[in-house]
Length: 320
Image (cartoon, helix red, strand yellow):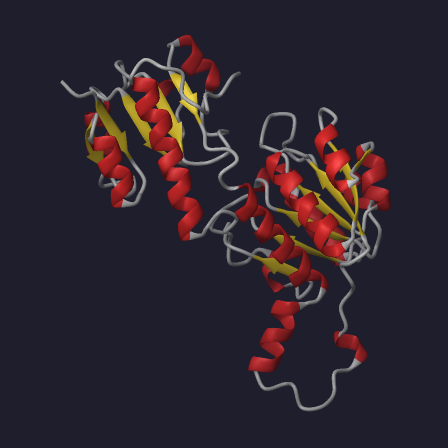
């Protein structure tokens, strides 16, 4: 008998067919108030769970006595209670690496868009306000040959460093839990303290995973260290930033601008002050949102699932 697994996120048919070769698939394109009771009923017999965003904690696991593996279609796994999974002998996996280049592209897009005021000037032209030569008040700032500070030099951070170093001749500073010798050798990255990075960087890019240690990693004190001419970029998780402190820093002119792909609440509240600031570029969490990358992520998660249910160690097993 094939093991029953639940896919609770919309994925390509090819991914479902791959899983269906060895598993009985119960498929939900999404979980909402209408489908959740059915989901819980199916969970009673499920051995595998594949999707993203669902909070997998003790309460949910109590409804899944046969569960053997939980596979996130994401690099992050802050939705998984790893202690609870470990206590029950349940494997947890994620999808690192396959999205590094795509998210790095998004981050460079945020850097360029914010520095050169591209979204703002796009609207200025489209609303018919371009009636004469461009005045100095509409000028942006250069990106090339500036200092980029990367907080979190993992796979994505390294991909950003590569683009910044080779494409824009930027000086790379970074702060990380451990030294990244590869980034130092390949991209000339310099390891430094968080405070030094904030004080020297023209662009500060936050790329840390969300953990108890990184909640509000960027707060009032950190923004005060930054240059008034500096731009802050966040494509990690909304909760890694004290959003109120960021808003105050922008309102007071403590920093020049911000490029954001993530927020504390998503979708972002319509009355969030960040949405009314011309010096802030806001995106709807599109970091890995291309057809090609989302397919690769889903197929990677599916491979983790099938491998784990076959009694082998999944390629991307999360180690606590």
